[in-house]
Amino acid sequence: MADLDSSEHHALAVSVQEQNGTAVIGLSGDLDMTSVIQARATIDAALAAGPARVVLDASGLQYMDSSGIALLVLVTQNAREVQVRNPAPIVRQLIDRADRTQRNIAHH
Image (cartoon, one colour):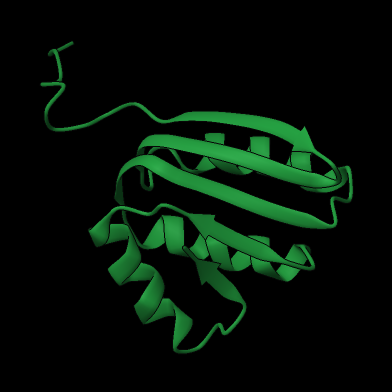
C-alpha cells in the first residue's frame, strides 16, 4: 500500500467532553467523506446523552467537504442548540454557505 503524504490528508481526531450539560466535541484534521463515519459515530454517542447544548470545537479542523456540512446539519436537527467554535476560514465559508438554508448553525 502506498504511503499517503501527510500534507495531503490529516487524519481526523474526535474528542468529547461534557461541561455543565454541554457536549464539547473537538474536531481536528480533515472531516471529509473518508472520515465522516468515524465522526458521526462519536457525535451520535454524545447526542444520545441528551445535552442541552453542543459545541463543535473546529479550531483543529484543517479541511471539511460537503460530508462535514451534512454532518453539521444532522447535528442541528438532533440538538437544541449548536455552536461551531473557532472554524478555519475555509470551514467558516462552508458554514456561511450552508447557513443560508440552515439558520441554527452559529459560529464564533
